Each structure stands twice: as C-alpha cells, then as structure tokens.
Amino acid sequence: MKKQLKIFGFIYLAFLLITTISCGGDDCGPFPDKYNITSFNWNVSDVEFAEDFYSNNNITNNEVNYSNYGIVVKAKTEEYYSKIFNLNLTAKAYACSPVPPTTDDKITNIEVIINQNYSSTFLSGSNMAEKFKAGFINEQETFESMSLVDYINTNPKVSREFILLLNDAPLENGEYTFTVKITMEGKTLDYFEFTTNSITITNN
Image (cartoon, rainbow, N blue to C red; front, side, top):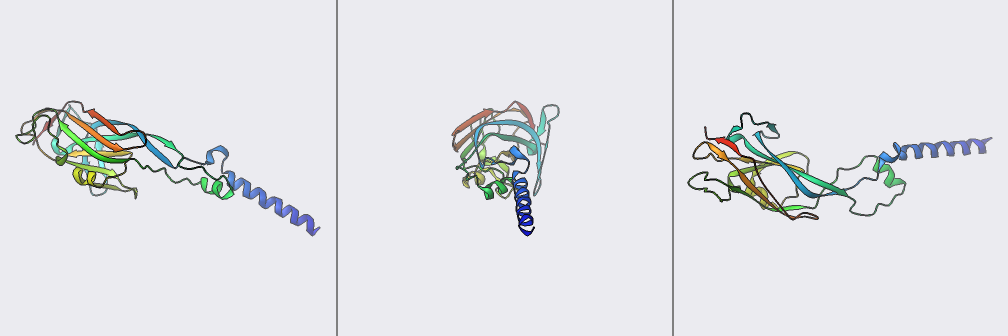
C-alpha cells in the first residue's frame, strides 16, 4: 500500500511539474532575446517634455510653436535568438516569464538638416542637431531627456522610440522641413534618412 502511495505521489508531482512548465503550451516560449533595427517610421507632433514623461499630440491647422515641435521616431524591428537555447526543464520554467528583448544596435550620429533658411545662423543645409533635445526610454525602462548632442556622445543603443524636440525659434514664422540622417552600428541597418512633412513653425 505504501509503495502504491509513493508511486501515486510521484506521478502527481510529475503532473504538477509538467503542467507548470507547459504554462499554456506553445505560448510559453522560448522567446527571442534580441532585436535589430530594420527601418524607422516617423511623424511630426506637438510634444511637451516633463521630468519623467512626455505628451505627444497631433498638430492642429498644420502649425506649432517651435518649443513644441517634435519629431517622433519609431524603430521597426526584427526579433531573433542570440544563442541556441538549452530546452531543459529549468529553461522552460523561466520561459514563462520572458525578459523583454534588447538590442546591440547603436547610434553613432544623428544630423538634423534644415531645408530652408531658419535664422541668420542656420541657413538652408545647416545641421541643427545642437538645437534639438532627445527624449527616449533608457535601459532602466524609464523616460530620460538630454541635449541631442549629449545623447549622441553616449553612443546609445537604439530605443524602440525616441523624440527630437526643437529648442530654437525661427527668425520668422514659416513652413519648414528637416532631413534627419541617422548613422548606426547595426546588425541589419547602418544608415537611414527621411525628410519631415512641411509644418508652419511659429516663434511666439
């Protein structure tokens, strides 16, 4: 009788272990642990930075004050496995609580070229990166902002989303466009550029 109870107990424990590890079947992993950047999407928005967050609103009447002019850049990504997983019991148990994938792709430079005469200092074709601020989610998953030049100098890993906020008023109210050139050390992508849509930027 005792032998039968031991066998039953072993089978029951084995059943609990298997059902815990299965964690819902195919949805339990393993999961990709890395991603690389394949391209970017972007849009111009009415943006405000706070200490630890930002607001992102649609521009109305195609006009925005320079202090709220923001270029929102979102990475298009491809997830992958950085190593071959050892599919043992421990690995499967941890697979039920996957860690968000990270990237090794890094930004080496960002230029923000103005395509019209913006001021007496920044004529058409000038790089205005020093007049922008960068907002991004850091590796601790919290929002952070700093000057774009300082951000570039940290040789940062590419965030899934970052924002370029203009900090310099135009000499005159007018329609302006910027060409953003992103240079990277990437697994798939090394360079990407785009030109923003024409928006009226005001200086008051």
